[in-house]
Amino acid sequence: MSTTVEKELAALEKMTTGELRARYRDLFGDEARSWNRRWLFRRCAWRVQALAEGGLPERARRRAMEIANDADIRFIPPRPVVPDKSKPRRSVPAHVKPDDRTPMGSGLLERRYKGRLYMVEVLPNGFRYDGQLYRSLTAVAHAITGSHWNGYHFFREALLDAKKTKEDR
Image (tube, rainbow, N blue to C red; front, side, top):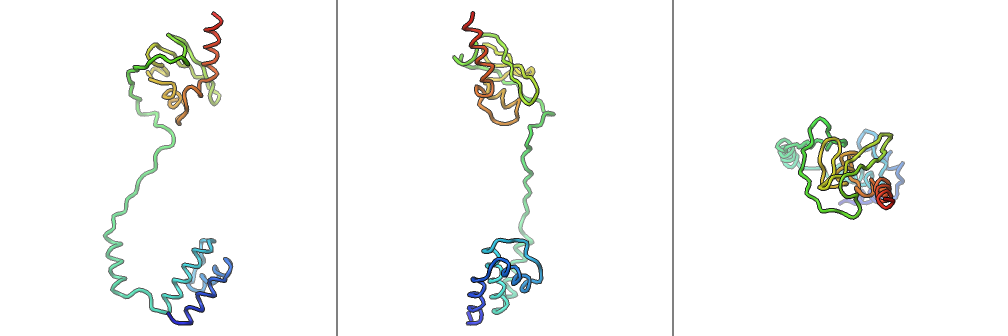
């Protein structure tokens, strides 16, 4: 590397972000879209060296273009944020062990969520919500909210009310 390139790189290292953006404009003939100082420094340093030393040889450029043309571009669609309600949910037979935290036998849990009242029927072998059987309250909470919730936390108030009613009998 020549001394002029070394001096130019040393000068780039001392420049502020605004000065690097101006130097980028001079070197590339276009405005930089980034305000990241390190990125600007690296791009300018690369360009200074490429101009001084001639950049990539023609053979390397051709090979890079061959590789770029042969590369398969993969597009992975993003996952849906909200569950697709048009697809029917599969009903799973519920085989659960009784839990002290849930009311035994049949009962109803009510939970108001986002202005709507949701009612879940407690069965001896699971829970029924919206005509579907669920093994756990967590699965019911997920069906209602579309995101993961701890079922006992989601239905906490309803469970406490059910327990209180049971104790009052």
